[in-house]
Image (cartoon, rainbow, N blue to C red):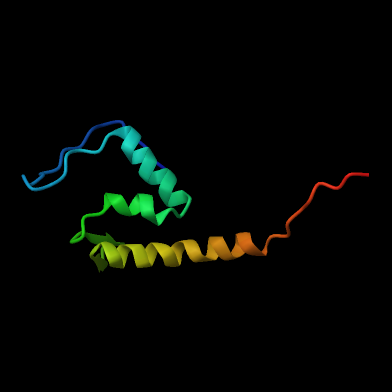
Length: 93
């Protein structure tokens, strides 16, 4: 699960002219919520096709498709566990 947190200080990053505008807090929350629901159609909108995601400083995922594949792997155990939970029904006496 991802959570959003704001640091007590702001940070500035160098942004090339060809990058998307800064994300709003509402848009970022939409991404977080979509990720937590495993809604690839929504959170996938946030990735540029040629993005590179660096994991742990030593592993790179290159491209939107590679990131989506990794995130599907991350969500698979949660989906499997949810599918195994017994379904309860309301029984009337």
